[in-house]
Length: 292
Ligand SMILES: [Zn+2]
Image 1 (spheres, helix red, strand yellow):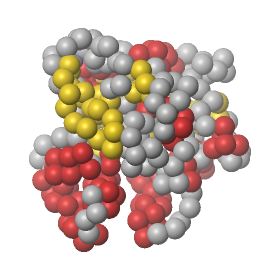
Image 2: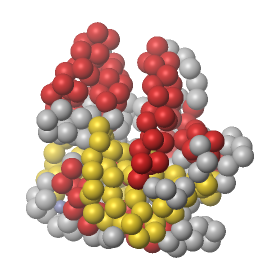
Image 3: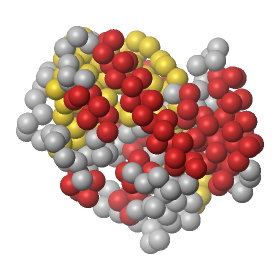
Image 4: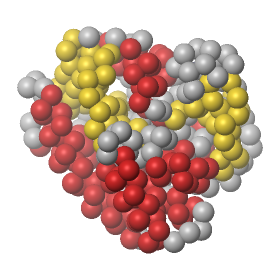
């Protein structure tokens, strides 16, 4: 694929300029190009650098394997993914119900809107954003905007905002986090689910860990990065919860990427969850951030 790249000059978390090369990762989904993950010398944050320009990054999403938008049920891994997703819808709605009596929900990067539909059926007032036009056109009976700058999204109007595996894709991080913070009522919550490269599966698969997912994953968060980043936007980290199925899903796909075997993938998923328990170092984590 033709390269049109943009250099990231400052650490997206602490703004330091000094950085070093950390890991080279191949994009096996679309381009087969190699991308560099850079480490901030000051705070240790990992970010993809350089990244495709805003105009060209859309090309890297054009993969047949990009399940979250495809809705197909081909193959065992996809089948399990869809089965687990239904269970996770139940868990996710229960999580936000326990946080808020007022049921006003914005789901950012809502894909085909499964989570919003599920919550709407449970009595939530729902709004979503989804940048991809084709995906948006497939959504029925839901209010969806292309992005956060829609005038119909009003300040201080949501008790809950969710970003399920979305933050790592956000191109204009600072601008969007400012906007997101302004949309949430005081005392409301932002729920952020992202991969965790301090997990066992990340450590054993290294450059084959599919949750690095370059170049569409721009940032690679640890717990301390989330805490530092969101404190700048008027949020306090109130809780962290694991997404236990991600360890299996990510390990299976990482095994596949390196040409390994299915059983080993399952075992590494199990190991990752067992080793994660005490330190909350699961393959993916859900951060519950309270708007101050
Ligand atoms: Zn930094």
